[in-house]
Image (cartoon, rainbow, N blue to C red; front, side, top):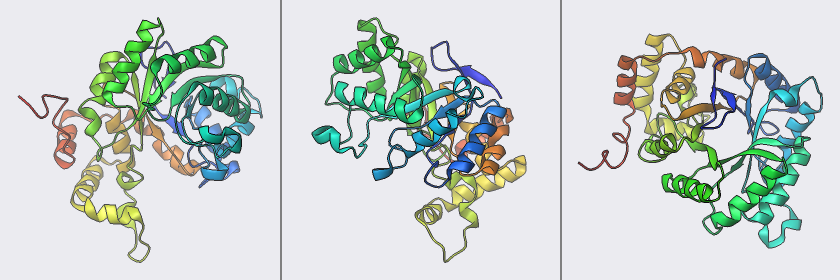
Length: 325
């Protein structure tokens, strides 16, 4: 496994991030344990989850599975750089009118304690805002996070789904408080979703914020399996496959030339951008996890990158050059 710094922090993380969204939903606890054990054996130390995973009335179930895995001991907790998130509705009646998605000092405190309890740990390395909440001031946010950092309950603060100007505002306000600010931004980025190249990725690179790509396979659409679906068992992704069929067929042909799977090429492509820390891999099975491990060793040369640009055109660069002189 290869490692890199998480943004401008001194923390090193694996260049693949294990996503756990399937745990407790599409992946049972036994298989989740096998995947996490295999991740540590392979040197993947960066695990990502969220308090709402499990969804709805089952929100928190994924964190509970990870917590029970940690409780087995054997250095599991000590070896993991753990990331979780706050923002969503945990379906907790005790939250009352503060139950809906959002951020506040109240919610950060309550939901951090809930995550720590479910994860069976006393600290979280990376605590991420799952979405921006522009109803809350940065004075309130940074004060809440500073208290948690001082208490030793979190190490670093990250964001997710922020606009470029949200990143700038966050760092400006953090600097005024003599704080490190954000070290990471988790953002949707893949060959079919290149809009972040306009502003989010350039802003993150300039500010020293490491980017973690979620949905790097566009919900499996770039994984090669969509083309193998049999007519008669259609899903929402099947309809999307038809929408992008020419591009996806050209992509599959290129991957065959390279002798690599579509999923691994798509994941390797995300790592080309200099702002990128790691893509999130979200395996449902141990076999899927093992298939992705060689991604960090795949090198895409300029000729291949040019062909990928032709198949999946980006916005044309960063703003404003992408749309103005």
